[in-house]
Length: 385
Image (cartoon, rainbow, N blue to C red; front, side, top):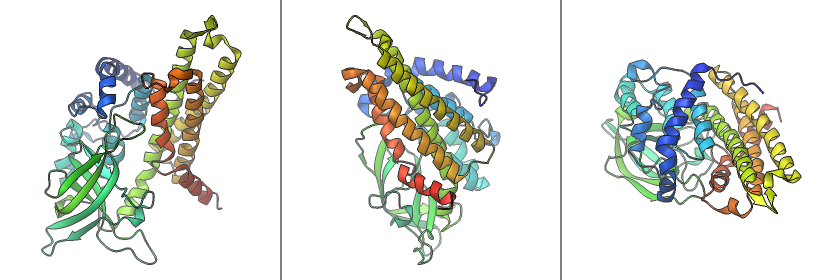
């Protein structure tokens, strides 16, 4: 089925990226997998390739292309090769929208050039040990000093993607108490320099999947954050978070579709090479039927993901549509990857094979960015239920 979502420029970018992955990532990926993170200097290579500045305006060192399609291609190509670029996705997909939409002109000139060059890697800290999806229940506080020059930040965050290597973290904290009629009131965003006294990185979390993406616990003890590093307006942080969630959920949906497509590719290749009872596993009717059914699901997920991608680029993707895309694509990926692992037999359980890593990586898709249950609530509300 012909795809219309990408043009010649996109496909040229795809070929450049595929060459880079084969030369710079694939030969080193097993080592990174064992280490549980990519080397910090690898991010400089991504920056030199231009990946961090695609959506950044030219006056700050970027390419000024207002489109998520290049990021989508990156997702397809890394997943196709069975690798990842570590936590760089959080740097671009999660953090950049907040900087572009909320930073003042002075802040953009101060922050974006280093963002594009990879000199400063960003992470965003929302989740706390006791809150999970209930962001309104966060207890991290940021108290404005008596002289009004800085905020005093105290609290803790967990599940922070890129938290180990981050140079700056967008921290969500309470600058005011919630209101009886509005639990979301009082949340503020601060860009926190990780070198500030009182800022500390706790454990690097040992995850089931996404092994090369460092995930950490963070702690703040009387961290003095200059008022110049307030992002947006005080007490409006929750509304900012809500506005960027559709893009985050679309990126998860696209990643899930790409994972499902990669799983079919891996299973097809493996079953064509693997012989059982004197013939290739791919020659058995059950294998053909399983792969055909999986391919049909991938085709459907691709159509949903592509449609949502177009809507995002056109500025028309709604919260409910993003939730629907995430729910559908992540559920498809769950089914397809499980069936493709089954076709690998015992080898599908061995981390040496990309299908095993893919199986583990995929599981979080139905949790982060909002659980599948939360997605159903959003869709149901949009239906008037």
